[in-house]
Length: 222
Image 1: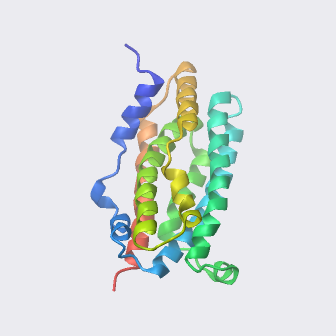
Image 2: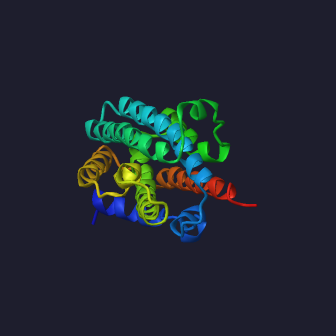
Image 3: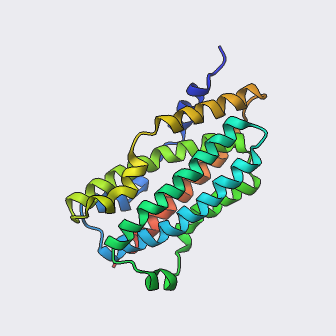
């Protein structure tokens, strides 16, 4: 029996699930042991990530213009990044990040490898296979964000609006799931998807995601 779009999404997400031990920073934050300066770095790095991913997803939507469901999914992701960027401002403010500090900040290469690869996918990747790879990565990121949001409230006393950025990514997104399923179905109906390519994209996304968190964790080392 042919694999359905939903089955392929679930199988890919399972295969690309990160090693629980690979992320040392989120458990540190979950214990309330991450310093305020590292939280500020997280906010500053995410400003760069969100802006870059927003443009990358817009471009992927443009490249997928011949496949309306795929284009719609990337458009929805771009709109989500724009909304997340607005939420990010309250988190940055709670971390003491102001305009002067933002302008003077030098981004960390280890944190910016992830959006650099998303930009590579926008220019060079196959949009159909990129849907599966990015969807799998977002599943892991949502779990991290749920943990961070809880820790910010419990250990750092951050107000609700300062946690909204992480709440946004942690919340279930049934409409986005529906669009992802439709996009994968569209790819299957158009002639199939190269699962080897999907896993190549997904493996690198997960590696760069892990690098992002590891780079923040290193800021806490003596």
